[in-house]
Image 1 (cartoon, rainbow, N blue to C red):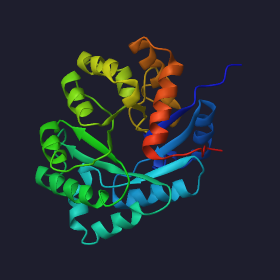
Image 2 (image 1 turned 135 degrees about the vertical axis):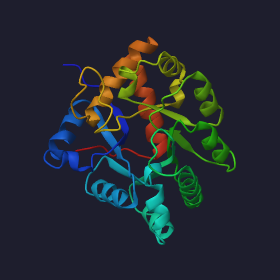
Image 3 (image 1 turned 120 degrees about the vertical axis):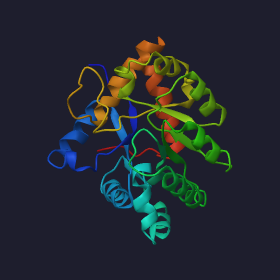
Length: 265
């Protein structure tokens, strides 16, 4: 029997309540699919602490800490937010700052609050040696204006969903590009064209589980195991061997997030 490709899910939310009844089985399914390292991404300060706790209790699991742009107002409303975030980023098994960024697709948090929260978190994160996980949706121009006002930002753009022009902007600034199941069902050909153009040395894979379940599993909860489905889809799209995609994306993830040899048991 052929061994599964070894993969890393660089962005999921396995600490969410969606998995409260079968989290152990989900981890086992991930390993069976070759996904032996995962990163649980925080979306608020409280959520980040849950991700950290989960990572500290499981081998092969890491966490990030940060406030999603939709949580920007709450982050700003907490007078201790900066202190709390700095403490979280110093904890073991925290692999990155994030997910932070700008999201203008839904009118949940005022743009001014998103921008202020992003700058605050950038300045806290830059005091560490950690990379950043950025969430950018329909806010590229404002995001680049902020990004370019700082230096030495090691980062990945999560759930990249834009065309070749935006890809060129990201690659030109040294970002890694994370692709997920969204590519398997998007109707935007420019996104698929960009996915073809991401250099192997700049590509990482993710699921954003429990969201963005890839085809042919639409309508079901997404899990880290579905990283393998995205890998196979991209290999066909890009006319490359799945093993080539897996090997490159895993190497990039392990090095970028400093994951080492630890794996899910």
